[in-house]
Image (cartoon, rainbow, N blue to C red):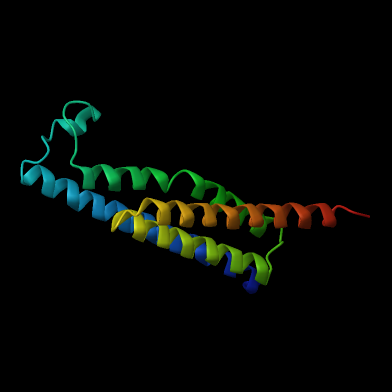
Length: 146
């Protein structure tokens, strides 16, 4: 049985899942509305080839795809941290910081889409991810020392 404190590293994963579901539901409602309002022909969604989507739909579609790019490394890092029993307050804090930055990135991307701000938040989240992975590597190397 795992230490209940080590489960704290898993809660940020649920928060990321909630973000993905929110963006998915928003994208779904926007697409349905666009088809209903004849802004997009439903045939476009067969292979995403004939015609195009209005910019707001392209933005949210791209953002949804983005949530399955770098965040995958977050999920793997959290799982590795949990499985190797290297959960610490530092790692939990990094995980929550990553999630907060991803929420901020989503907010900027899906509202003002201010590119300099969006890119800054995106790279800040990636820096946190790098810190998480480096911390885990150092912890694993130290655990392997005699």
